[in-house]
Length: 156
Image 1 (cartoon, rainbow, N blue to C red):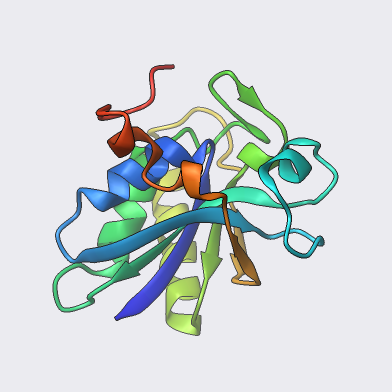
Image 2: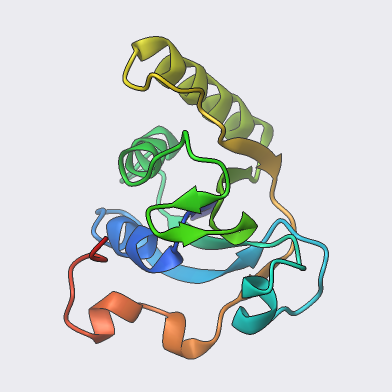
């Protein structure tokens, strides 16, 4: 099993997208990429922690590749909006890939460049590609939030 970590706006919808993928085992929503230890949702929403809402994906590379997960990431948010996704605005909603290995970093960079070269977006892709750092599990009510409410995706 391997880990992958992605930030693509509100973590509820992003987590739901990854949970539907064969080969993905547990997903956990939480906070990463900032400078505060053990932040709460309220702390992260204050904009003073530097953390992004993120999804940590545990996956079986024999069933799903990291490149497959990157495609899910790119297809489930707008990577051209800085610190915002839909109505959600703030640094915690930024687009970021937190890599866990040199191979993940290379794949992330290659996929970002390929997407930029594809012409799919007229604006610059602002997604950050950073080394994975401490990941803080979000409060339990955020875990599988949409699934618990019988919803398939967030309404924007």
